[in-house]
Image (cartoon, rainbow, N blue to C red):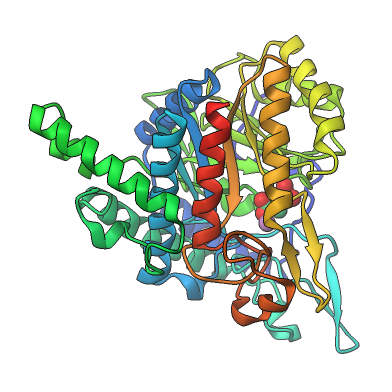
Length: 442
Ligand code: PEP
Ligand code: CO
């Protein structure tokens, strides 16, 4: 392999990059970012790699989720606590029902950039640069707002730091302790997701029993692992958060525990793969219908030459209508190449739809149908589905149709808040977790 450093990607074609009008201002921001402290430490990254290796072997289950794109304005205690709470609630449902410990990874504290299908769009007859996420420009449809601004990278770093700081304080401070009913109950009351209340009661009874036996340490329940992730999209930003770790003799990205490369930027000869291959972090790769078995084999040879468990999570996102034909050939190709990957299913990005009113949405049943098929197809191929990847929020938004609340297309306008893709709301997410737990038991 050719030598690598955090800048070798610059010699490769990079998709989805904005053009900054002032290169001097850009360089000043990057220089500042390189001097700021890392957001995570290598030991945490190594620990996550180990947990993902166990998930790949079927002994744990990965739950990855959060917003499609975080916005700076949503960096509030309520929004952060809501997302953490729903992920913890889902992981209780998955652990209890699926009988496996859950590895929790948020799409959070850095998920600020979005790939776009077109570099520009027309708004009221005017051609404007597309919104690429708060890391790059602003959503407001004016030429000023849409101009790429490098200062946004610093803002992103500080918003990520504030978000992560709050998450760390919550997870270290007993937020996850099941003995605090106010943190675990659903605001909608017992009717919202009935299975959840039964589970919570059972979990609490088991805990009381174990505590009575002296079998569990209170601290073990109060402290939980929670990891962060985002799409590695804006390469100058990611490179500036990359650090040499002498003890490990390796480069780590220390702006998040794990990064993934998106469906639109995983070209074999592209800059994103070149950047990612040199990192010690565990890496995710989104794989959609356009991926051929040979491409996936070449990609794995590039990113995982050592065939290391925990290194690569392949996140398939075919859509309910295509997974049956698309997944099996990839399963065979990866088995033949001998990479011990963790397979995860993103049932969101292949199931986009447009409502009659013109809103981007996704239907609960389509999401579920892709997941069911993923479990079946892995089972039939002697493979393991070891994780799931969701766009979700802790708030009571109305962006996806269906679920126990039976949201219809007409309901979507009530609380449609996403700046990007539609997310499962709290009740839909939790209901989904129970259904997944059932599939995990087979
Ligand atoms: C995403 O995860 O928000 C995304 C854009 O996914 P994909 O690259 O799979 O389309
Ligand atoms: Co998305």
